[in-house]
Image (cartoon, rainbow, N blue to C red; front, top):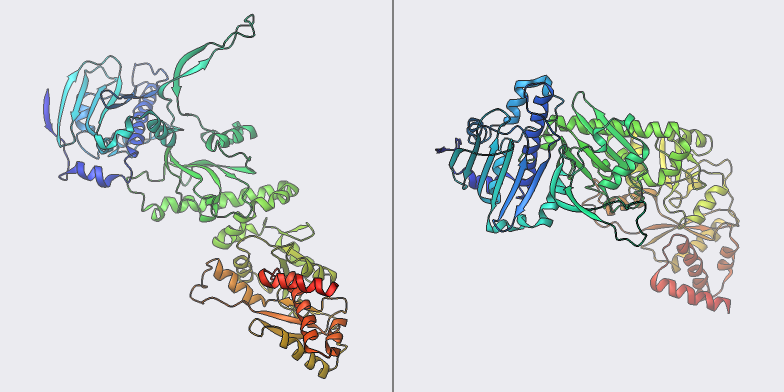
Length: 628
C-alpha cells in the first residue's frame, strides 16, 4: 500500500469545492456520469483504431444505491485506470484526462464524442460524500487499484482484485445529503442531466410484459419478467442527419422532451453546423398566440449530450427563448461557473447563427407554402414580431416573410401592403398611412367607417404592437401607422372632397358650448367636424401619439419610464351634419339638452369600450327611460 498527499496548488481545496465550485450539489451525479461516459468512449475509440485487444461489448453505465451502507455507486466498463494513472489523474486536482487523451489522438478522437473539460468533475463528489472510493481496472494488462479519500488532502492507494475492467465510484453519502440515497431523487437527476447521454445508463430494473402464446386462453394473466431499466436515450433525434428523419420522428422526439405538452408543434428547425463552430439541435415552434412570458426556459442546452441548463439567455436570442427544443454544442464551455457565457465569443457566434437559421427557415416555409404559413401566422407572429423589435439583423430578414393581415382575412407582406395603399392612403405630406386595428370587436364601428371610405385596415393585435409600429416607422421611409380609432383619419388622409357643415359658424360655436357643458373638460377636447349625416353624432378618438406613448409606458417600453402616469384624454368629434345636433340646438331646456348629449356620448363610449361601472348603469337606466 502507498500513502501520500493529493497534489493541490491551494490549501483547503475541499471546503472550496463544497461551498463554491458548483452552485448546486446535485450536479455531482452529472459529473460522475459524464466521466464514466468519457472513459467508455475512450475505450470504444481505442478499440476502433486497434490500440487494444480487449473487446468492446456495448457497455453500459450502472448507478446503484445501497441504503444500508449509505452508499451510491457509479459503475462503468470504460478504459479504467492503473495505479499510476490514478496517481496522475485523480491526485493532481484539475488535470483533465480527457484533455490529455484528445491532445494525444487529436484528429482521430475528434469524432469519438469524448466530453472532456471535466478537470474538477470527480471532486464534486465531496459535496455530498464524507468518503469516496475508487475501484478501477485498466483495459491494459495491469493490476486493479483501490483509492480512498475522506474529504481531506490525505488518501490511500493500493493494488486490489477486480474481475471486470472499468471503474466503480463509491460515495459514502453524508448526513446532510441523504436525499441522494432515495431512488426517486436519483432517478430525477439522471433523467434531468443524463437523459440523452451517448452510453446506456442502467438504474434498477423494471417489469416487462411478455407476449402471450398464440394458443393461450384469453383470460390468462400476462407473464412478466424483470429487465434492466435503461433510463436514457443514447441516440436522440438531434444527433442524426435530417435526411434520416421523418416528420413522425421529429414529433416523437418533441413528445419525449415535453411529455405533458398535448399540442403538436407547428414546425421544427434542425440545426446542424460544423464550421466555424460545432452545433446541432432541433428547435420547435409551439402555438404561442398572445402569451409572451410563460413560454420561456423551454430550450434545453447540452454539451455533447450532457445537459447543462434550460436558462439559455445569451446563447439563444431573447425572442427565440419562447421556442422549445434542444441545442447541443461542444463549443459552449461546460464550466463550473457559467456567469461569463454571454461574453464568450463562441456563444455570440452561436446566437447569431441560430438567428440566421431561424430566419432562413421561416423564409423557406413562406416561399414553399404561403397558404400554410398564413394559416399559422396567428400562432407564430409574437415570436417574429418580437424578433423584429429586438434584433436588427432579424428585422431585415423578416421583410421576406413578416405578414400584415387585414381585418378581412387577406395577408400582405410590407411591400405588398404599401403598394396596395400608395394611391389612396397618404397624408398631406404624401406619407403613406397604414391604418390598423388592435381589437377587431372593440373597434368594429371604426373599422366599418374606414372600410366604407375605401381604406385598407390591417389587424395588428400582438401585445407589443405599440413598440412594433414605433420600430417600423423608424426603419421604414415615408410611412406612419395610425390605429383606426385614433385621431380624425379623414383629416389625416388626403380627401378629394371635404364635407360642408349644415350649420353656420355661430351655430357651431353655440353647439360646441352646449356639448362642453355636458362633458368633462379634463377628459374630452370638443372638436366640430362636418361628417356624413349618417355617421355617428359624436365620435371619440384618442390622439395616436398620446395613446401609443401610454401603451408603451404601461408595458414598460424603453424611454417611457419616468414620464409619470399619462392621463386618459380623448378628442370628441361632433358631427355637425347629424340631425341630433340640430335638435340639441333647438332644445329649450338645459336638462333635456344635457340628456341628449350624454346619451350620444355614452353611445360613443360604447364604441371605444369606455362605458363601465356606474356610467354604464346610468346609461341603461336613461335608455329605458327614453324608450318609455
